[in-house]
Image (tube, rainbow, N blue to C red):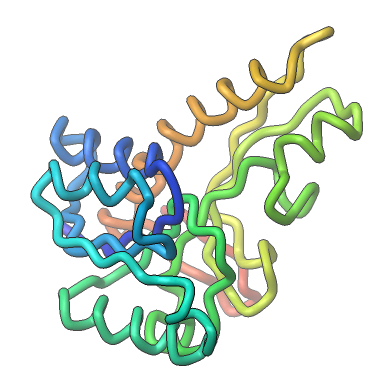
Length: 201
């Protein structure tokens, strides 16, 4: 079993998917702490209802980003977290977290990286008129959305499909692929090679 610390900013649907997978026995993990960049994030309620300790950080805490990240890293270590899971966390993590949890910070992105990085991956892909998009799970590093890719799943954009429909289908993939990828990590099957690629055994 791996112990996970989860970072959120909003409703926490990917957090809920992780909680549900643990409850279903398909993810051999325990969420030991959930930290939100917003104290009013609904995901904190999801965590509390699952009996998971939570911390909600205020905007003032983030005035000094390095100090905020150092606080997060310390709280995660104190809770016993072995991996940091970003689940809709809308801030870039910096050196205090990345160095404390080297190659152990996992992120999910709603597009097929390296295409359409950034905060609007779904709408950027949709507005670009591409026929295929998808979801990426990757290790976070100091370059935004450029860390080693662990898993991807593609999705065809239907002719005439609305953005709302595409968003719903992307999120459905996220809720499956994230717990499944974390299970690979829990099983010790995910390693990073010398050339900074991900190997899955």
